[in-house]
Length: 242
Image (cartoon, rainbow, N blue to C red):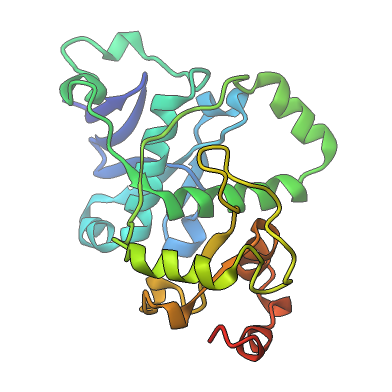
């Protein structure tokens, strides 16, 4: 046997070759970062979603197993290969007697953290901005018109409903930051639409209490999350929200 391969979505994801090399497909060129050689997967170029081969000596397998970053990018590559129809590379001459991983798992989808998906998109967005317009347009000509779907996992908190009700009643239909009236009413019950924001995020061990929560209009809520340098918490304190 010259090689042992794992096939997923019509291309090889992992191969152990006769010259004691491990080849893995990953979704980003992290070779310099992890200390291994990389090369572009030729069959992925036309898709606009470049994948990369990571080449590892078999005697370095312990380093591979311990490197969570490699496995994360391997997982993303696996999902992309199974999602994007125009990533091709079927080798019919090597398919005899082998199975697709997606068939072995009977179609069960393996989820990925929502935060990871957002981080990956942010990184790809930055890369796209750094490219020139011609490169983007060339990729768009080959890209799938329908977006791929990926099953995501996210951690949610079982929040106290009393906190939400009390904070909304305290707001009395006005944003706790800009003081403007709620921008619209909910179609379902006619209530003023405001969103609950935790000053110290629950994910950062913040309390689910009325003292740590404020009702905000959608615009101020986005500002609280994405314009943090301009979000003045002292203003909330002055309004006795904290």
